[in-house]
Image (tube, rainbow, N blue to C red; front, top):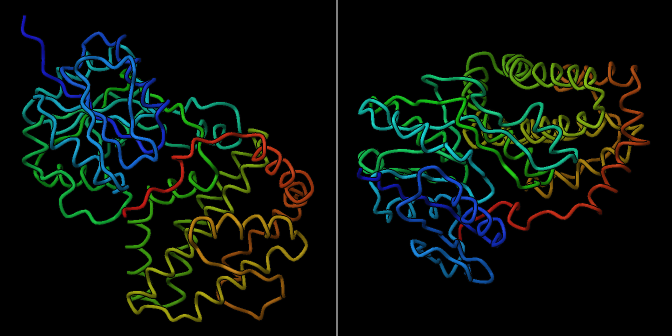
Length: 383
């Protein structure tokens, strides 16, 4: 029996331990990879492994190039008939390849993946991910619109035909881009919910919000741009209410039922980051002026006149994500944003804001001081 030639390709940036653990984890696979490729994306200490398997290849960049370049290089240099791309913080069920390989052989299928969940611990972000995170395609077997880029299988001929990430210039969203590209070429995406994969890395709350926003920002940008062009600020506010505020309030209500009041902080951070990014997008395209952004920042800051700890932490986290904000807590005149933020009254009345101020923020600080995060959870940038 001829064994399938599968190239397992993974990527490391200052996360040697996770990468070594992944390689050792492959020993349990019911179908063994033909080769294992590690793309070392400019780690401070070059990746090495004393007990490396004979089929391990290491491709090293002397300078950090970003995850998109790392993935494109590794996939393009693989020699197997099938390509398994997997992030170093992911782990697969032992029979994952055995389940996915028969499907990917179908010429109409461009990519195969499975259910992805988070198993990184019991801190705030891990608990949030368990309930609201990228737990894609659980229990689903069949065609889907999206397969997460953390673990997927495809034929090398499909990668070559699609051009991979060619033309994708951003440092995030490469999985969305590739899935869209494959569908436009007529390929189908297939998910087997029984092919389990899970993430083991603990990530920071800022990285979580970046990931959450990355997943939905393209359609929201598109909708907001159309609404602003058609109906001005009134249309824009209505669009942002439907696409950002209402879904947030639904998650906050569910968090209340789960007795997870600290989830509110993550939701506020995601909302503020998403609103600013959307307004920046519209400003770059001439649909709003700089005053709209200034009004947004002022109106958001005014929500927390009585909760300065919350605002201080939000400002620090947003600036860590590159938002460049300086909030103050002065009352502002009537602006379109005040109606969008009317939900804050409900949160004040039910006491959740007060709880977050007096108990939640100190708990977040304690958790942050106690938690050891993998250094590679910071955003990778090219150069």
